[in-house]
Length: 423
Image (cartoon, rainbow, N blue to C red; front, side):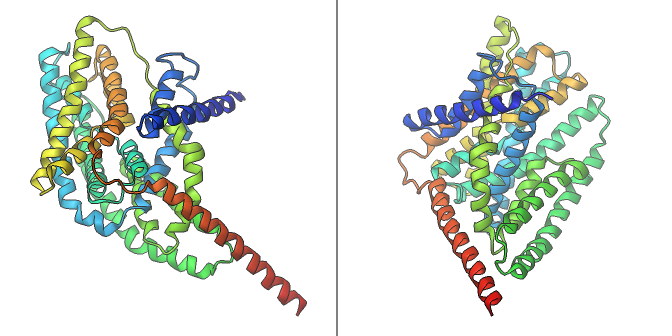
């Protein structure tokens, strides 16, 4: 057994914190620093940290699950329902515009063999990774807002539409998945989430009330167990991304009476370990192969198309739903990030022959550039507007208060037991 993962994790935590403080000095979200730390230490630059560590990958996957679970707990289901219509339109245009634009660019310039490969390049551009946007909005204090809820709703629907598009492409390319079966599983998953939400939070509330504060530590454990189970069920039984299941679990736990306490207990784990590992792992995944001049030109154009098409499509969808121009700009930029989702889609295409090897480099470059640009562009989009108090500091205050409450409660229970024993 190798213990190299210990110094690797230590280096990740140290570097992400240092780079986060540096980017903060330049008035940028600290998540940008974490991404840059992974890029610098990974195979793309210094090659200090490997990108094939199973332990790091599993911690990173757990990190994105916890991030989306926390986002779900901070989201009011009523606000999400209100954003459902606008979220659908934002997601729909945010998928169609990049799909057509990416396919057009590939048809014009990329060395592909057939039209199906061209449209697969467009399919890669449809993917949205909302986890970095969620962290950025939370850091700036705008996650619980009309724009934040719309982005979350659109990202969930975008994930479903992306699965449908990927399934169609892989089926046409010789994949074994049935389109109708996947669509059926998606519908079943939505029904499953609705039933679990309607029943689950009542069961959790009953369980929490039954505990009567005897052991407060069981609350976050129960919530985290629900998160992990929902993430696993989404992937294993319905073929939906695990982060979608985690977000659904967050919505359910967030409706309980102990949601604030659970969130305060999970926050240290997220910020201390899982979050930094996840964001650094994205940069560590970047491996740039040798590229010709034509491929380099294609890479630059692909980056421009990736950013502009998402911004235009999602912004246009928001405009049709009555958002202001400034809000449309924020929503469009919030959906630009591709992150690990696009890498997963591209890897699937490589496995079945829909992604030419020569285009892997441009896709990786597009993913990392859009991932780093998204927090920066969001920061610029909110510049000049009244900024809410950063939610991280609010949660820190809540956490300290609940820590005190936890200590006082434990001492009261201990005193009560001692009093009964004396009697």
